[in-house]
Image (tube, rainbow over all chains, first blue to last red):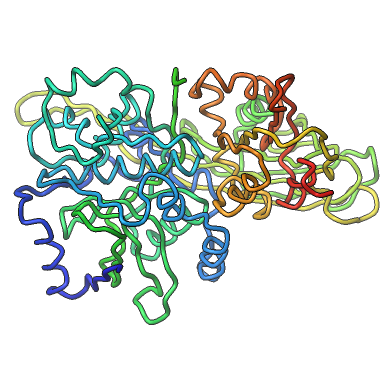
Length: 275
Length: 239
């Protein structure tokens, strides 16, 4: 059963903070100040402003666009459940402060699924080199840079939730890392109000792309796999999330705090030299 | 077409509000003007001019003015551009260290479109109706450009994103290999086994669908049809 949290309620937020008591560190470092939406530094990181590529969906078409996406199963949640995360699958960062890579790698696998690439389980913990294998949080843009330039290792023996954050271990299992790389990313603007951010996120989802997101109030990174229209909720929206605290289904967030503080649309991936 | 668009972009420094002659005779050039406010020195990103099938464009001698020729029917031209203006600023901090930053001066977006008609007004041209290809079912690859997704009509875009449609194609015996984005094509970001499909669409305008017989032989490619019904028609699913 999908759990829903009203994140404008402090008690509900508290339940999320303590969801995995084994995690001792905040997983996300907020986006750098110099990495502004549309800035040259953002371009160098590979972040294309979503408006540079897409005509955004107008507000009066949100409901109809989401209805069409559900009718045709074109949201990330549909592709994810059909491939790497079937019903009952549990995604678990296993006590490490590595939500930044569990979220990003989930998004990468979902993007591969949306491109109809072969399902290959990837190991989020293999990105631990970005933090020198320490148990600590990271910038989302750091994960994006690593996933674009280096790639993510396939899970060993299918252990997608492996928490072996060891350089010696992954040096011996690094051969195929470069085959599974992120390519194009759409950036969103979180500095000019919730309405703008909602439009960016909804447009990316309805154009069939997954969202790598973070909430500063939670210090947590996740994958947004869809939106549901519900006129009883703030902004008429329910945010559908793949979390990494061992849930066996998605979780839902409602409330104004459900609007992400950072969001990146994973548009496409590269796969070279694979059989 | 991308190279031509880039040349047009570099040749005309002034961009902005788009106007176009709304009605012209067959063979008569149509005048389009564009007036923008992109600061000198700004970086630009985006396709610039986007023309539909059967349309060609050349700059005139006047800045911001272009001549268009098009096949009979109704056409849409579009101008889409994002600009970003920054300036390097160097200063010395309290420790005497020289620091250079990129100072953000501004950014802007243009997304203008206009319609015109050549000859007598008629229904929208759209992709040509497909001719069924005998010999299926097929392995299928689709090719698209992410920065043009919003230019594709919604019905044409569905096969690129819809799980329902993919399952339907598979139920009819086809193998849906992949929906490959143009950057991956240009930069070789695909397995060698797909080279035949990629070669088949080389130089063709996206979006495309490429199919091959399961018995081997040459890969055939076509414009991606305007609806899933036409995709099935192309694949010979409709008897």
